Image (cartoon, rainbow, N blue to C red; front, top):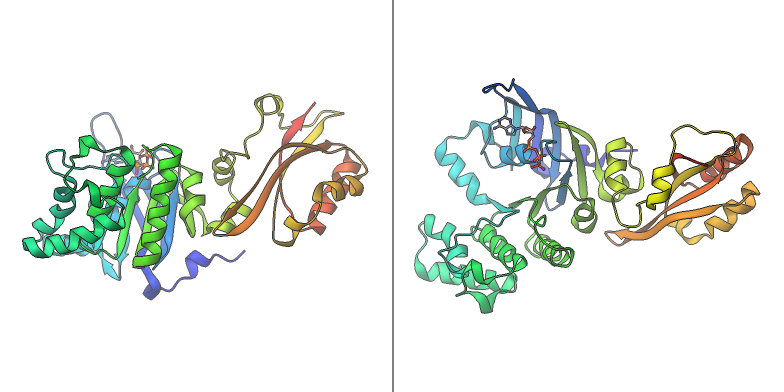
Length: 359
Ligand SMILES: Nc1ncnc2c1ncn2[C@@H]1O[C@H](COP(=O)(O)OP(=O)(O)OP(=O)(O)O)[C@@H](O)[C@H]1O
């Protein structure tokens, strides 16, 4: 498969990581640690790009390199063509005005009202009161908090606090918005509302969004492009739809298997064995999209293999308006049945993954 993310020319890129490594020096009993290892990645201008990985994979380190909170040990990070690692203090201040950031725990000042929090970066930039009013009011409208401008953070829900965080991040009219687990502290419904707001900001303001998360739900709901990071290395990347329908790396598959509808029932998961014994059934995940999604796949599969098929789990979903489906099925694991099934899957363009065997 082609790799569209890697093919963006640097002039169409909001952010470019060029062979970036980050090593932290030894401290106390801990030896030196490589948090990022030769990462090359391009974030297309106008995209919502997700970086997903488990805890400790290097996501925060990656994002801190973009706003200059960390410097690469080797390689370069370019934001709009500017080498962040080479900036002096004045250059960093100007970079940070063009890069907004939102956080998991919102980072609002409790002593300031909603208006005061959003106005803060503009006060720091030395803007006069009238100009600040003119900038902040429409932002509070945009995030749906116009009626809360005089409230304090303690009087707001988590979702409202994050809306303040978003308005504050947009105050300096940045071209790039960084999101560090911005929905991780929110319930699923509020998460969806905040993600919808990010989509709207991306579409209406043309802002590039680079978000890090450990949740595939977030990647699915909002991103156009995704990179998977594992132990400091980018192990997979591409358009989100392609990565979801053709995951190539075990870590990506493991992250996808946590999505609702992809989870195996507990009893099946517990009985799953890597090796087949005589009489076992094989458990296979099928991913389908495009024309395959329109066909009566299971009845055709049963006809092709001439044996029973059990449906264990399944979901139909969409990414960016493109539907795809995932079904976990079990059928006889003998060589003849498996051979017929594999031919059927190949003829129908289905992506398959053998999850294991059950008695
Ligand atoms: N200043 C530092 N000194 C030493 N090691 C560090 C430092 N900052 C991060 N690390 C290590 O680098 C690795 C990556 O950390 P990072 O915070 O980037 O991961 P993450 O993917 O964001 O994880 P999480 O989702 O838990 O926040 C971790 O093992 C962490 O302990």
